[in-house]
Length: 309
Length: 264
Image (cartoon, rainbow over all chains, first blue to last red; front, side, top):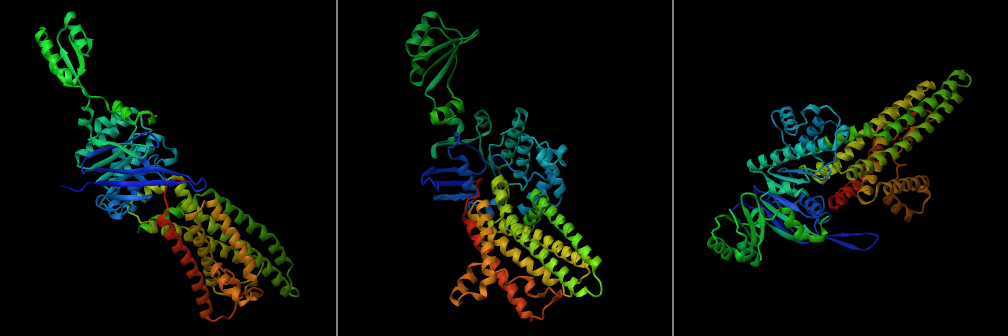
């Protein structure tokens, strides 16, 4: 089995307030892993510790305790960083450069020496739809354009692992879709992607796994689809439901929703067999019986409760 | 290669920096202001008062050199502090340090960028000094290296001290300490030889005695010529300065290695 791309084991980070003398626990014994080749979302309300975790991962700040490995190396190790593409939250840049010069600067720092750097840079700018703005100073870019440029610089060194802090922040719906498609294309290439986002509907569309933290503590980690299907309710769809049978169904704690050509019955999983038999016996044709999936947003709100904004 | 990339980028950002542009404008104004009296002196110089006029002109040049040199120290300290602090404040350091770049390489690149700026400053400063001397009808009978190397070593010291302080403190505090230190140096520098022997060593170790590195030590300004010092005196003075700068720069690397790179 391939080693995990990211390993966090019992990581603790406490911020000291110098003059107030107080302490803030940013991460309290957080442990998780991100396997190679998967798209993993790192979720949590504001102040949950996501950016702290990503900063530790990149070697920008040091954890107080715990074991961290990124692509098999300690955080900040140049061997790991050579294989990472990173997009920080609110990507900042040298405003006096244009996109081409900024990418050339980052290419020089990446240590990568492509045969045709001009083509590589043009291709990346085209990929993020900035090819028409090569010569424009970045200081004149819109928020969305800056974000796209940030993505281009993250992809510059053909990384194995992409760490993206709010990659769709500041983008319009069309731009968000492009980024989603780009992430899915990168996933198809076998890249590992670790991203944080507040747009949970997007996460649901592109991620294999989610890690949820709240107030510096790990709340949940696991594969996304089984996690969403964990609810203890089922949905039974029947072609019709006589009124006398409806009452019997409701007596078993189920809810009934009538539609023009079908009837939807939602009930506890424990009642599914009894209800199915009741419906069959009453002459109803059961079209489907499926576990009910909750949305990621519902699950997220349930898990982090009042701390989510 | 990576250090060079950071250095060139730092130097490029200085050339667009409003504070530095303002600084250079003031510098140019000062040179223009000094030209008027020098031209006047030249106009009134005759064979009988030539000796006296030479003294007047060279004294004025010494004053300008001292002023520009002092400005240069502040510029070196400010540029070093700003080069690191502005990256941290704006957050540009995050994308840069996400590259396979070691922290010492980043700091070395920044330091070299500051030295490149100061090299340009020194060349302009020496050029302005020679221009003023020429306008006053005087010549420096000395090789240029003394005028170029000594200020450069002093600036390397102030830049290293400032870089160390800014890795620990807010840039305003760092600059405040540098100005306080420069004031102490100017006080103790002139009285160093009069101090009790037991006090000399700690002061010598603690303070950057840039008076040791003053090109004026080696120049007979009143005759604008190089004093006949043995080369070992120059070597010792320059080695002292470079060693002092290196120690502070290594301390800066040590502190920077362990500090957070977050935007605070």
